[in-house]
Length: 241
Figure 1 (cartoon, rainbow, N blue to C red):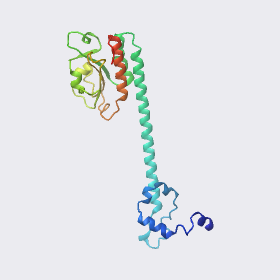
Figure 2: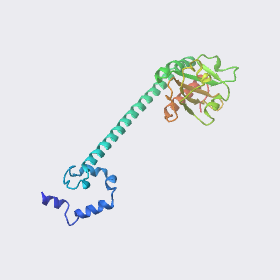
Figure 3: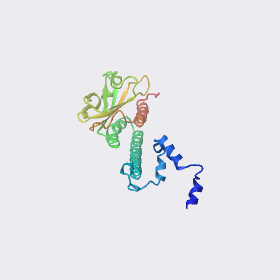
Figure 4: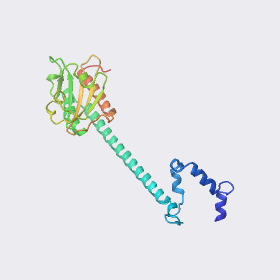
């Protein structure tokens, strides 16, 4: 056995003194190469413990390090799996919403799908469609559509904002209407069929605070907003773009 060991690492190439000198000069070597810990065979805790002050529990250190690494790997793995599942679930919901509105037979049916079916698909408390109007004509007479004053979409979202997520909602009467008392957080999406058409707003509300918040991704909601823009343009006879 001794012969095979010397063949693997000949003393003339690497001596114990050289290894010790290198490790002393590079105390962070194991931190830079943590995988090497798995291949080391340290002395037991009480081996050669003639001088208690010189005993180093390397075995305990390595076991603790490996346990910590394994725990972090498991946590990262679980977080990744949960995130992937959540993303797939959200993607499925948005796709179902898109298919639902595309099945609308007419404008009234479209509004009914948006306000009554989409909340069930998205598992939220309310979905409202608001359209800016001067108050004399337009959507104010259409059941399920709330009329907003001109400029109110920009006032809520900002002129250059497509989607706004609010984790705390205290005054939502103009957006959520009769359901305003339930809404604690919401997602607002600008709907711009074309530059000449009145601006509209998709408002998704939840009674749960922090259901929507600034740290969430908005790509899927943006996709749904794009689908609704095209549907509005089709039913109102307006070109999109």
